[in-house]
Length: 295
Ligand code: G1P
Image (cartoon, rainbow, N blue to C red; front, side, top):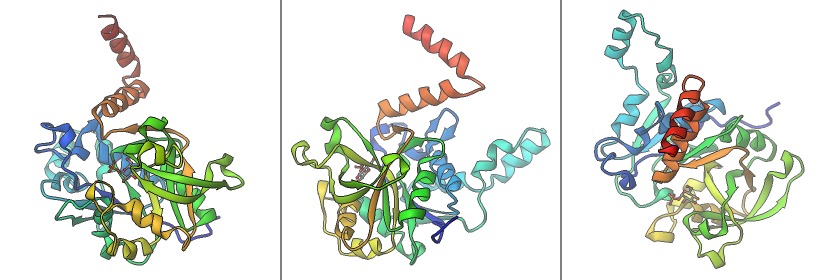
């Protein structure tokens, strides 16, 4: 039974320039690049819906309108498909209830914390989720559903974490984990501290923030006067760190697979892994990959 008010809103920061994927991202937003046949953003939105989230708030920038168009009804396309008696089911995940797709602009790239703060008027005074779509999380149930289940128990603020090799910690937000809570297979722990992109020797653990958050609305007020942090950017991690001690803060270790689609290698890995699992093409992809490796 749900003990808490359900999380109904999610913020997707998608204003980034995607420079690592140029020239592909000169015109096409990085979030619209497909993993097999679904754009990256679709995976995050599907994960949100599975967790019961209804309202998707995209923090976009110039040249990113394709993301919003993707979740609109493509009238001409759908009429043509209907005429040709082609199945429209494939487009279903791209449809949204009117009013459930919202876009706000981040006019200047001041950092992730600033991007989230740009959504404050839409988020209002309720707890909300955040998805960083670069992080492709594949699980059953999905990462946010796992988090929502834990949130029902502990409330407060919750982030998903996973372990990476120690030498990689400096690319991420890192947690200082406290005691594990009973239940949840030991995957739910308190968070005692958070630090964004620490030098390896200063990292309190090898557990990194993996791009999914459930936060209380107070974070918006904390972000309001957040100073610049790592990389000269307004960091969400720094604002969250300031909330520890004033509100409950927990981390859930994600049970599933994560692909870092912000890097080319991660993107190729995700494409191959998901293609291999597809019922309609997995066998052929396996045979093709084996042939390529032999050549
Ligand atoms: C952001 C967050 C960081 C998190 C990471 C996950 O960093 O600031 O805490 O670990 O996403 O991908 P970015 O990748 O935007 O530098």
